[in-house]
Image (cartoon, rainbow over all chains, first blue to last red):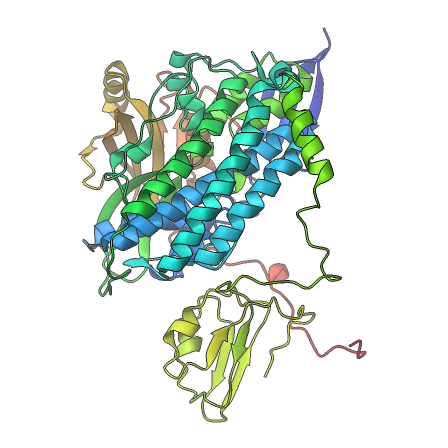
Length: 358
Length: 108
Length: 137
């Protein structure tokens, strides 16, 4: 049977970020997908040679627009444990709250994109309408909508006063009601089920072997969540990883919907328990040594490897983002699928290509 | 059940007002504490150059002998580092987005 | 947030045996990272099982660093190994899926291989903007 090569991307309506795939197609069935990335490669790992380790928080935050806060937080955590800085507990709780808000906005963004990939544009608009409420809360507490700018080495830069905390908790109630409303559509709607059920099945062993992380792995039954490592304030909050067993795109969508509600509960717990005190400590000196820090981004486990040699510039800074680990799974899922399922399969791992190619 | 969820949502929002504001025909209510454009108060500035040294993008230029303070609007990322470090409090982040910058010239 | 990285320093000839042993114990691959040191290329392989990290470290001699591929043990290393080849110029022998340098499209080949940041070519510097010729506002 003759084969056709269909180029997909870098510009495509369903892609949030540019990636190029050459799809080798045999009469509407995709036989192989060859990726080609590098459209958004900015060489940020090499920028450590120019920016000192304090300023680099700004660069780390701007690696990605969707998962920006947790990048900044992980960088601060890595350098702080390298320099043995004891971050005050209030700052840890504030970072947890902002991290979970970041997770909510990222999952709502993904739900909208998934609806758009299926052609369900009105649901896409509703998801982003709810996301606007979350971004307003973030802007009131952190100052920026997308780039929070609130982490620094030694703590956080701003505090949230008691009045804003109570306003946030009230706003969370209305956000939770809206989330429950739209996730009901994602879980129960017949056309959503027809597009997502049975598409892109990853068995438990396959998902583990391919090195998947995050909701992609949890939807196949492996209960792995880096938040159980207990960084920031997670050691004081109770958290069970959300899992499903079917491993298809519907399960991945359902895991993210459940994680939205889990994050709202975590924020409520954290805001109820938040201790008083200062929000930052002064940090002097230069880091020395090497360390690996891992946190849970909305897309999975992110690994930061930081190596310092006592000068104010870091020697080596390497990030392994969750999409980098999930891309082989996506390429595996694309083999043998229908051409019409390609947008759904691309989005089902929640690709964040600007993280992948920093 | 299957189609009812979306129809319920669609009907509810068909009856309600849209959640968006028809800006600029209606006024904008900025959120307090939002980081917008940097405001320079030259009356209280002592030209100590601390802000220019701390700026991560190099958007502030201070000429101490001639007593000149300039900002490149296109480079400013509204991070607020200069606001924290200024000893006299002459830099503030307002909540407005400011007028769009059309050239790369520095603003004196 | 695991800090104290238990790093085992090995040489390239025992790499495959060690990786196979880790795979048999149920570890999954977390990352392969490369760093350019002044006189060698350093590779770190990280593996994880139930939140416990195990790391292997290799030092490869310059100028032509070579390392065997572990794609026969872990199928998913294609992106890591192609990336260290494209960015650092490390020759990985026996890759199952080999993009021959086409994964990352950069203007300069192997941009991270040298210790200093590569200089941008003259055509990419922004030209200084003069005053606007006609007053539009």
